[in-house]
Amino acid sequence: MAIINFTKADVLRAQNLENEKWYSWEVASCTGPTPNKNKDGVNFLVSFKLIDASDELNGKEVNRIYSSKAISMFIPLVAACKGMTQDSMPKESFQFDTDEIVGKKVDGKYTLELYEGQLQGRVESYLPYKSAAGQGPQF
View 1 (cartoon, one colour):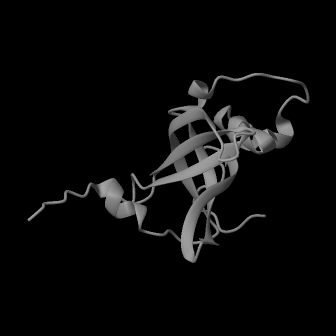
View 2 (cartoon, one colour):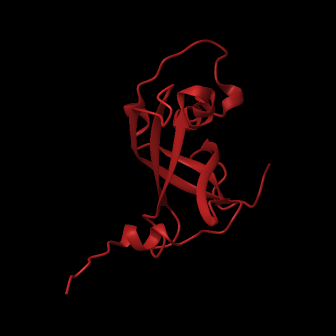
């Protein structure tokens, strides 16, 4: 007989949160670039860890993939990690190191989407930390 050990993160991965609700998150990791499936671009995988919720839910992780084919989708997260909204970002070219966002805290709206027949959680619509947490749908 095999013994399988499940971590709290494993258990929480299957736990869905309330849809269309703002939560506070910490960027746990940002990996990449890794080639995409078609080998015509690269992807970055950002892992978010739930914070400031309940002891029962804190630590839940949600992943989000960003593609080089739509790299501007990354900008709202970068802005929130810098403590500003996307609209307040300077309208000029910039570079950033993906390591800069690891450990940063942001608020993000959790949404549920149907993917291949299963509900899948996703974090989107980022704002600076503590500027939206606990609020209902805003946008």
